[in-house]
Image (cartoon, rainbow, N blue to C red):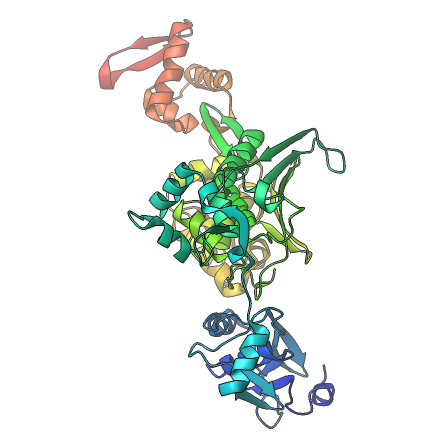
Amino acid sequence: MSTEEFAQAFPAENEHVERKSGAGAALQDVVVAFSNTDGGVILIGVDDGGRVIGRALTPGLEDDIHRVVREIASPGRYTIHQLAVGSSTVVVLAVARRIEGFAQTSQGRTLVRRGTQNVALFGSELARFLHEHSLARFEETETRASLESAEDELVREVARAFGWTSDVSDRLREQGFLAPDGRRLTVAGALYLLADPAEALGKAYVEVLRFPAEGGDYDKRLELRGPANRQVEKAVDAVVAELGTELVVLGLHRFELPRVPTVVLREALANAVAHRSYELRGTAVRVEIYPGEVRIVSPGGLPEPVTVENIRETTAARNLHVIQALRRFGLAEDVGRGVDVMVDSMREELLDPPLFEDSGSAVTVTLRIRSAVTPQERAWIREVEGRGLIEPGDRFLLVHAARGERLTNARARQILGVDADEARRALQRLRDGGFLDQVGERSGTWYSLRDSLHPPAGLRLSGAELEELVLADAREPGAPRLTNARVRELTGLDRVDALRILDSLVDQGRLRREGSKRGTFYLPT
């Protein structure tokens, strides 16, 4: 927008517009008031008079905004954008009206937006507002299943997970597994205390479908029933069994690489089971396995205020008691860590990050099995990591360097998706760690893989090819005497593997052993 267009679009503060020069604690009141009324936008980088003073959407500012919103109890969904206004930039925090429930400040105040004011509610007005906006969690809804229908072993299992030693009925009621009168199981209780929750809750199970090709029909289907924690365990085992591992043989080294890390599958399935809408009785959690990816589909949209855009910074639980129990069983990460663990674990394996989609009626997590990094390159990175500490993002730079690329700051920014300063720090970190060599200075600087790190023969050649390489060196006129150390130098193998090559050639009669102990050397026959 031009300055004039911006002034025309936002001529003054009103019930939907607020101006702020910075992102301080005062944002909290506005976000709460917008959430409890009709939503609105907060223009950060604009003074009270409407003059654009400008604020760039830096990582620090974005973190500050997320931190302010995290301190609010149940805010509406929000998004953060950067708007160019003339030669300046304005950060726009857009807050949606909360559809279910209501928001409160960290001090417990309930605010609504009236004109340009954020008004606190008291007395009868507050009581009426709370009555109109109170949200009853569906997981606490009473079912027809009685406490007597619960499996005794499952009750003991839950008690062990939570560390209860007495008054189990009271603890179940406190945990939301029993209705207040203690007679009937709630939805959450049925999920953990019934042998087959689907009998009381509809399709409360996990369905696994295997598709031999994209767009075709499935050729295998599993229905994984049982308590929620066992559903997650069974589903993880089933998917891992279908995917298997990527076996890579580089020379004498074998690497078994996970096609998708187990911790990622576990967290994605735990979230799908715990955060699904159990009001949608006719739909199961669905796992679709394709040759190139795994899709995990959970009925119901993301719980407010979580969106696909802020899913790493914002947390909310549709079924709080269900997810708390999964954490007690060791099947879900602590609050706020689940998505981070999924993203970081895929990155550590040099796989594409999870893709999150929210259609409003379902949330889909897509985990790609293949990535731009080949299994052989993943195996080589594992070998290189034995020589020094490498940060997760740096692995991608090493892969591109191993492909023969000249890594400039611009190329590193493109590969890592970071700014120039972070790209420079990553390149220099690898240089200082002995992984890259720097060529040139200042604007002409570029980096290449250090010669000693190029995939050695031991990681490139088969056992037979390695034997031929060693034999050729033994026959080379003027070559150093063939010893274990010489073989290690030629191939990059360790002492044991080098000795295995030499012993094999001796057994074949192609080399003969001379000397003993440290003085051992080998001659061609």
